[in-house]
Image 1 (cartoon, rainbow over the protein chains, first blue to last red):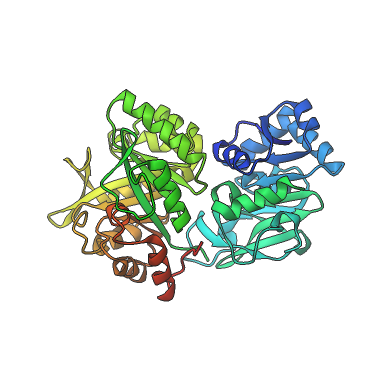
Image 2 (tube, helix red, strand yellow):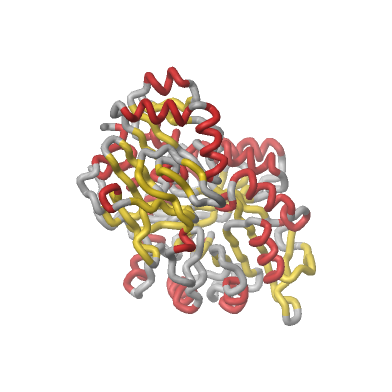
Length: 203
Length: 253
């Protein structure tokens, strides 16, 4: 059973529908015992980092996620959910993240060459730095996934599972042990995205 | 690099796609769910569902169809048509829409753009604009192109961006239905005025029209069309292969 963390951020219809499509059992919940009982976690999220971070820490969900994942329970952060795995974000101030991936979330505007639109919105090709990353078990280099983001995760090379080229290489996926993150939306990336969710659900 | 997007638009009324369709291998060509799935399989990058029903009953059927589509098609879905309040946003987002397109509703009450962007994020708010040449300017029309608002299209679109719209759909009423190509002049004026993605709509009659659009106006991010796709005059898979052969970066699924 996958626990999709429900903390009032974003529209989870597609995520639930895609897990249902691939036959993965999932529950949308903020109930701590349900999250403890689940064998995997998905941390979704769309919107502002500060608000999301505050919701996680004030509800005690942050502490629970940190303790559950410290014993090796897998977590997949999607979009803002991936960024929340990092130590901190510089999105309108400095805000703390869960500290599960070493690094800082920074504005795309600080690295993109002039003329590229922000947010990066649309389909871009994955370049797999770590084809051995288990969530890419069914994926290939060059497959397209759907991005919508204005900030990016700046992390050490060893945590970088995939990048996409947007003027410069931009973090598309991170991986550290049982901690996984996708900047893109697998639930909006057609069959390519479903394969990634399937690989995660089969861990 | 991010790809140029190809977007079919489905006008839905009373559970059927309006505007005839002429596909091989589809049993019920006017069933929106089958058609959406077909387009997704052919490599469409997004889908736009346009609700052209007027009654409450029609609206309920529309949201049922949207839900059914969103359960089966995993590419971004934009919904437009009759969106005039935050409760309209809420209704379609709960049924699986990813983006919501506002047109006349935003002209009557521009605050809806700002409020929706704050609540759901800018990525969710698409400002759709019907524009037409009046004298030397491009005017914004509302109510399905029936009323000239007198607003200057470039100014209105800049205002929309400032209020928090995440994307623009520019439909040229001059080019719409003529099938002689996108309105490059109008699109040029708009795409240079904003930094958010611009989707070109109106005028596509051939695959060459899409090539010309993307080659001439690098700041245009996507091309949208309806009947040329529904009638099979342009097949999305062939269109994308053609664009790729000619150096346009597109997603080949």
